[in-house]
Image (cartoon, rainbow, N blue to C red; front, side):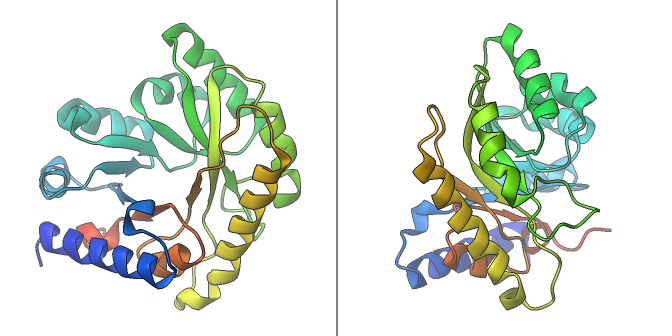
Length: 228
């Protein structure tokens, strides 16, 4: 199947999952993850109606953004090193993976001279996996409170990446936990914080994530095919 056909199929699955959970299909946004995907295939997806692109590496994103430009919005979805913050604040419309005060302070510092307020998500590591970024759920509200005081960042919600399972039902408890945590943080009423986004779900499990409340799903393989 072509990229356009893959994209249409993914969008249909998103819509069906949203309807099953009594939600509007428009309440879920698709982020096409373009790690290692060449510009020609990205352009094909954008031409077919993909509106948000997600990149894992700043350097790779910089090259692609130069060529694809503002035809789509760009989200950063990988682990962000502090020394790349100065590039990230220039390149991305949303940074989904903020997981420490140290990173937040550096992003705020780099955004200030640009006069930008950068929308961010707080990344949670709900399974405590050492190989993945993310703050522990017990520390998440405290981190949100601290970041809310930085004038050049705005917390828009939460993001997680559960352990990899062949069965999407096994990821569902993590998705549910993130939604409940989002509700808890929203109920705390931290000034300036908008808990409007829940980013969770990938090619193998995005339907379960939508049923549990995802507003952003990060899909690569189901659109662009298996990575080399």
